[in-house]
Length: 116
Image 1 (cartoon, rainbow, N blue to C red):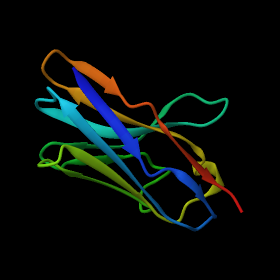
Image 2: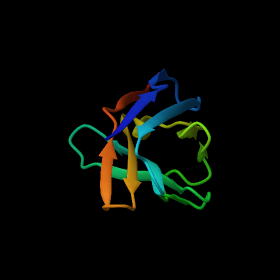
Image 3: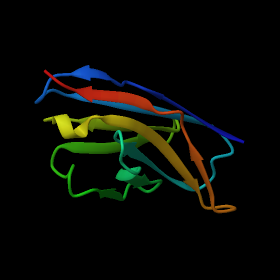
């Protein structure tokens, strides 16, 4: 079984920064880790993903503002969020897609609120 534990959410003013972390444990194998978010009344959407080898993918709405990275030794993925906007307000979920068995695992989510 795989467990994902997120941290780093909170309240920040527009233009501010936050860093989210997600630590994975268990049989993670070869995988892609990423962040998704869900704003009130909206569907969950992709924010960014990063493969074990380091290749990344970003939603257009966060390109140039957010940076995803990972530490494979710690099985941890990070999301550095800069120049935050009110529309970035959402619950952010960590995801791990394990290639063996094509399994998807989700964290419980961490709330990010961007407001003055």
